[in-house]
Length: 300
Image (cartoon, rainbow, N blue to C red; front, side, top):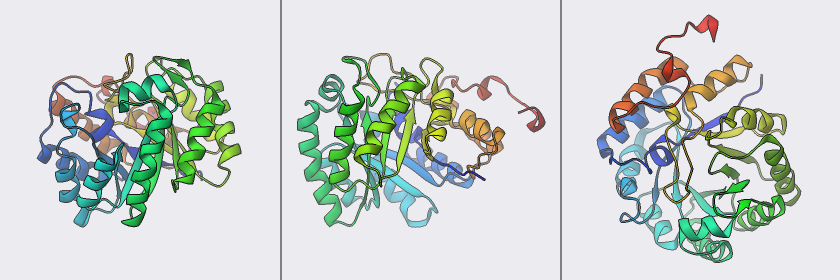
């Protein structure tokens, strides 16, 4: 049976664009529930400016609380050397370095164009490697940028190759604004594989135009077995106009299971946790399953 690894990103990508700041204890409670539901890989936050993204100011506290006893890989995002040091001080064991393939989004998100952001990440990678922290990487706007339009697959491949040289053991390609089509996923994955044939790839999909399931299916056909998603379809990028929610974990797991693909995640437990997320952020979530209170398993 085909098996995929889903990284749950609701605590980071899901909450970073919300107008409310969810308390630390609630994030910890949600993380433990997700792990109990079978989630083996979980983003718990990002070490970024608390002024620009106040929802992530407690990432260190969340990580420190969870680390001692959870049977899952806990990831945090890092953009700068300061963030890398904060991650190390908090005891991080797995970090994702993030850079945009497009200059327009990189300038809005990281304050500098892509090449300068990559130079900055090289210092981060060195610090993290010396501390024994496992490094993965995410390429934002890998397919489409809200400022620069379609991203050239060769550009995405070049950025991914530079991240590979920094020691990234996995590279994730992100459809930051949910505008990618399967043909663009295919072109970018092929270009990146030419540069990094031995590095596993993942997909980080948003569902702005309802294409996430099609892009996930294309990824599966291309041999990708790592996917990011957020419970209830929560999420968006504060610095990417038009970005909406991530592909919903509950929908993605239900979709995969229906096609005989194993995730190790319990859909019924996710449903209860989805309600918890909705209460925490104070609004209805966007997953398809959240609009259908009870669907018999035999009909899914």
